[in-house]
Length: 352
Ligand SMILES: C[S@@+](CC[C@H](N)C(=O)[O-])C[C@H]1O[C@@H](n2cnc3c(N)ncnc32)[C@H](O)[C@@H]1O
Image 1 (cartoon, rainbow, N blue to C red):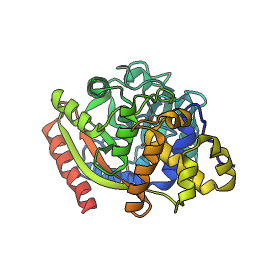
Image 2: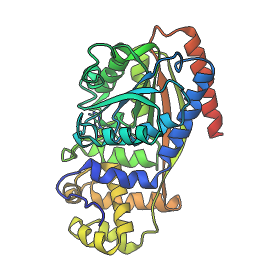
Image 3: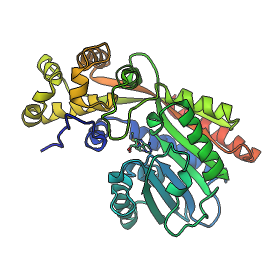
Image 4: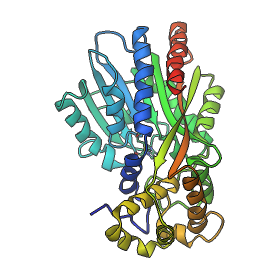
């Protein structure tokens, strides 16, 4: 029996796995990440020395993505991981799913981990260091992280000020002088994933019923670039496109999707279409009943009609224009800046 869609609330962790199962985003970002970090390692940058490398993951989810990112990177001494997420289901320091997946990866030898810890909290509150310090760390993680990942999390910042506070927090309190922050986010482009998220999610201003808060930022990569510029941080980016695949949906499916009271019967009669429905909800992150009751230009009926056209136009696919973005501290050595420039070049080649 598939996990049911709650009708009165948007429950993030019930929906997100359906998205991950049908997108090539995680495969692409893992490939890009491997090319970038291995290029830095080859130039003897960032991944250096005999000690395990301190790695932070912000908005880690269950850490499955982080495991993919690091498993594809060669570094003999291994990694010391600190991870945080808003949802305790993922990042609780004793019972979170991230802890479970990290220990399984370590036990299976999928990832060389010297240690790890997780903590749940709000990444945009300006206090990342305590969230990314383990119980025995004291102050030792300050300025100690060689790699900080912020992968698909900025969507949840409240506004530009929160994005800027986040970037400054990473630069001032987390990054080592020879460290890099690596970010992946979907950017705004007409007819793609983010146009629908912006129009029917963030701009609808009615998604308070979501357990991770609203997806408020229309064009996260643009906000990140602006924040890095304003903070005068060295900054780079590279573009790529991911696909989100849907099954072949009939007129009847699309009509069914408009009525939340019929969702449970759909779960029983057509589990595959039900997973597609979850993917549609992941775009907007709104509670079904609230969304269906919105008969304005930002409501469920209009959303379904418009996104259907886009998905069918792309052959049952909803593309997303994505960006890898990198920044380092303003006092980073010139050698690191030059090395990042070259490593970004290897990423760009992957796309051509
Ligand atoms: C799309 S998932 C990304 C997960 C993983 N980083 C990846 O790239 O696959 C976004 C994550 O951000 C988390 N999140 C949402 N709001 C947050 C906040 N205010 N602080 C920290 N994490 C947050 C969600 O719970 C979710 O796990």
